[in-house]
Length: 199
Image (cartoon, rainbow, N blue to C red; front, side, top):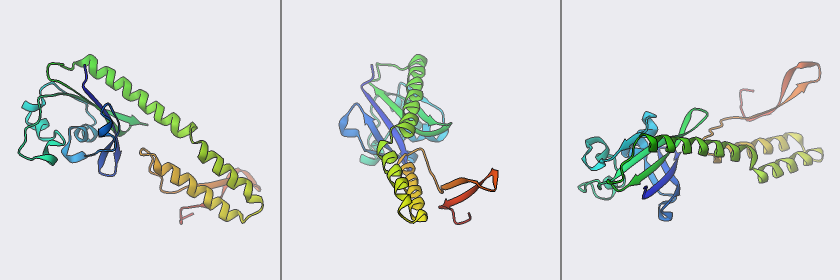
């Protein structure tokens, strides 16, 4: 029986709790370099430990103990942490904690890893298909292209795309292009507008 479950996603040099069985934990920031969740994210290896208090490495990385009181002891707790990935890239973790008498085993780890895979699929689906406002705004800009300067419209479309992608924690887009088929050569594409100065 788990007493606490957090789902965290990577932001900059830390993890932010996006979902938690304790609503007060949501949006809490967890440093990567001082946490068990960060250790899993860096090593790409899950952690299953039924005695964090007596593990010299994990007890030192049990956050928020160090942040709140450097002299405090890690609590007696069992932890299970597994990574959430997208296209093979680690983007966050699921962190499960329970009282030490509720011991985690291999079957618990396999279950949490399966849940992590489902979360990754849900994120992908949301990113690809649930951006209704994004699609509406982009369509509106393209429709307006007939009455406005096309370069301005294409720039706005690309900025909207890059802005939306940047809001997703697992995408780091640096540049975007709009390309059209070359009227003189149907096997080639022509860059109509690009945010990359090299194009």
